Length: 134
Image (spheres, rainbow, N blue to C red):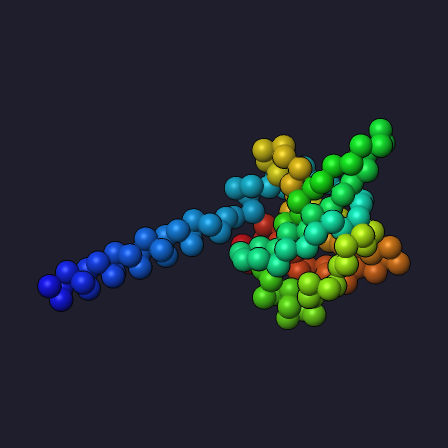
């Protein structure tokens, strides 16, 4: 009976570990480094969730329509260590994001650099670029 419990808990642990590993992805699996993109708009929402943070950006197109883009950023812990908190990008903040478009053509991108309205680039390097740290 005791061996059965050990096997049961070990199996459950492996299943949970596999689920967490599959949730994390490599840059190249979702984003295309041959499709650089620059987006300008207002921050609609910031999510500091694992394994990557997300900035939701309202981008106004030339025809006046607004697209809501999801910009993937670095892991929340890495951003916290650089001083980035939930309050660092208030809703409505105007930013320019340079990054790479998603492979599936959806309104998602991997953010490489962010530029604020005053020209500062406080979060350069904090966002995933498909480099060695992936």
